[in-house]
Image 1 (cartoon, rainbow, N blue to C red):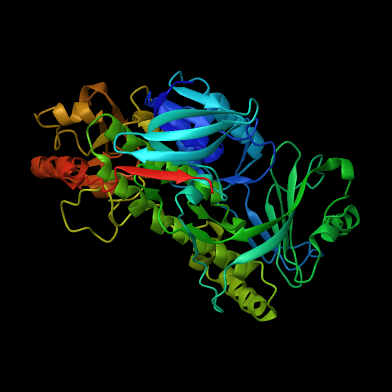
Image 2 (cartoon, rainbow, N blue to C red):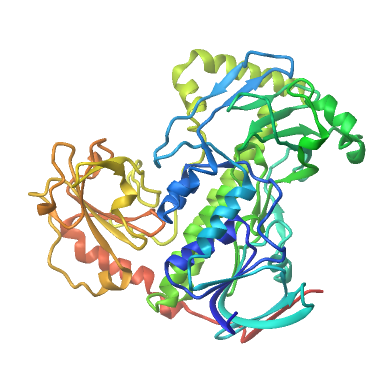
Length: 549
């Protein structure tokens, strides 16, 4: 362990592990701190989406993840546990980002895979059995006090940035005295908090790969395969029920009886978990930044808790690199919360609404829901909207580190995550588009090669940002190397609306700008101003002390 790091990460869950890998890719000196003896052995999240798998792909983990992820699988909604025919089904297809939007995982195996990847980076140190005690943010560094639970020793390290990836009970958040706010918008004004019984069984004999929801009163429930013969069962805890009694073997046997035979020796986890809909009042204080569950807590009904943390890491790490490379100053960190808060809030509200609508104990809501699904079954556009999961909020930002040259059109992809179609490469193979990109900025030149060219220009900014040039040809062209160093053909017509234009992609695959050859100088002038905001840098406090009380 060194005395000084560029970044210290508190928490080695999925969010912290992804952040550590991304920092390792950039060769940024990083310390990953975990208070437990290893990555988690307890199953928690059971689903990753297409955006998370895209991040894994761009870290070079797509083949490794095939061993720990069960791709695809839909959802089936049943009236009750005695029903054999679902009244509604969701069968998502491979989505716009190149993967299925629902993929099952066993979180301990998922974390171990991420941990093994982090270990390959010489710039990343990892310590277990170390707990954060306090930190002191000064003008040029943050001093961090850790406690080693094995040796009972305290030690100090310093860093430029501190990332709180330490979960829903985040020590970092508590030390900053940042409050969590309820955003569930419950009609009675109360906070959203639902207790559910969680039961994970190994050697499971239920055959379906789909998630099954049993929706009617009095006790909504669900089950879903995770991996390697394991299945998650969840049952709503009803008012007045004793947690201890409901977790007894006798009661659990009754609860799972409609689905499988209960055997005590097959129990991997049993617990009562309280689902919340909370978001931190702010995601950042100085150079200390909250990510994942430390910044927001999402009910599981849309499967977005873990995935939202991955998006946080992917959004933040490249910005830290710009600062550490002295291209930008710390004011660009304002964009982290600007770009993430609205999308996180939309995901939380989606999860709450899905829980209230699908897994309701209200007979009135049940009637409304059943009527809605009946209408859906005979209205094709509505059916596709539900069955293909088009209701999921799109990853798009309305403000942040983007350059809008022209008035933003209604269907513009500016500020959105770029789709990832299969494209034709110059070796005449079809692969996902990101294989043509890099982990820095990428400039796409879209269109007929006789009509659009990379002009002569000053390469200084390109060199600083590591911009890679990629030519995207119309579907009728072969991707010949004569058209550029990296050439692909858009065989699916994804970029038809952007012919003879340039598209600048950020490292997190969001569209930073769209412009023509005539707008080249104007665009890059504005981009430079967007990323270099040194006059806005203000440090109000010279020393900010945070201690455990």
